[in-house]
Amino acid sequence: MIEGSCLCGAVRFRARRISGIVTCHCTMCRKAAGGAAGAFCVALRDEVTWEGAEHLTVHQSSPGLERSFCSRCGTAMTGANLIEPDETVILAANALDGDVAARVIAQEHCAAKAAWDRDSEKAPHFDGAFPGWENLRP
Image (tube, rainbow, N blue to C red):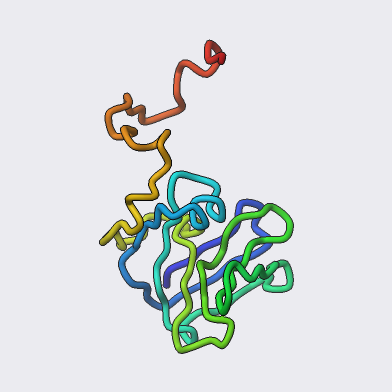
């Protein structure tokens, strides 16, 4: 069973299985995810159970599509799903808990990648926190 939750723990989901993960660099997905890209996977709707669904806030992000977020902490819990649902549900991969076997299989809307993120793979990488936070100033 694959599990996911929001930052505050008010909303949780369990999925029997998920697809590979697709990251999206479009402006809408970046804003919804609060980062450089949205990351999403697909599950079969009848294989997903929710706890705390009463804490989900739904936003119609574009005609015919809606996204859901935890109303307490703002964590994105689903991607752009059809308002008239089909048999699938797009889950926000940022909400996945633990070490999930799924990996990124594609990146979309790369032309819309944020300018500040275009060379991020060249920046130094740390296994822990960035050691320069205390000296970081504009």
